[in-house]
Picture (tube, rainbow, N blue to C red):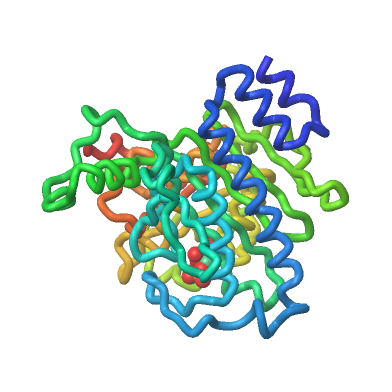
Length: 370
Ligand code: P6P
């Protein structure tokens, strides 16, 4: 059964996807999408790990400002192109919402003509019905210092038109196809069919979920394959590490300040002081939280009522993974996965990790309506 495949460490990601497709757990489109994500992850791993050796070409600033208002790094742009084109070449992509793209990119496969002109292939001009969101290189400001960075991705399938009522202010003036693409892009995290991240660190780890638990793979560069190393990742019910930018503590609301002060001093439910571990790269901080337990938080603060992290391509995929591993993910007042996005780059406060730690911080209220 599905569990058998998961128990056989040494299985490659390629074979894992074939086995799931043979069992009807994923369809051919999703299998194709994951093939392209797998190949893109290998290329990005190589780029990140060799960047210091090719400083002029790969490190430093691109000289552009992205939609986030952040200085784009050369690697932000390069890795975004790698990820975007890998997905486009599947011909299955409806749109890709990316941290590095102002607007969602349509899935029309582009072909570079001999004269360098780029045009959509006639046969694949109509985008597919798979919708993805991605942070191609999360934490890229850390790359120059060799600190771990990562890729985050989420995959949706075409929503049932009857179920997706776009708010009028969003759908006004859009063609039917544009409304279809927007509805496919702006879905709540609970509609994700798959999510994952790639951690570029001492090893390159790819962690994913198709909604049936969380599985981890490690890149074996001697064979150029991701090999299953963690068949079933479950986050401990409680940890002893908290992960947040404590420099912002004065900006947080009182309950969050009280909570951090309590666990820091050993005055929380576990009566033991927690350690602070924070590398400022979400994928690294989440991967450690997933494996060791504890809590990660980028909460709302006085200046940013919605926190800093983006719902569509950071908060939702990571929350899906965390819940699938037995953890929890809230905004401080509701479940992250219940939030219906109204914008591609919408931010969301995120408090996620071990279920008992998240409950101690503050049980979520009823799911947000919408
Ligand atoms: P701060 C990186 O810029 C990022 O988006 C996440 O990877 C990380 O968790 C967070 O921002 C760090 O933000 O404000 O603590 O530097």
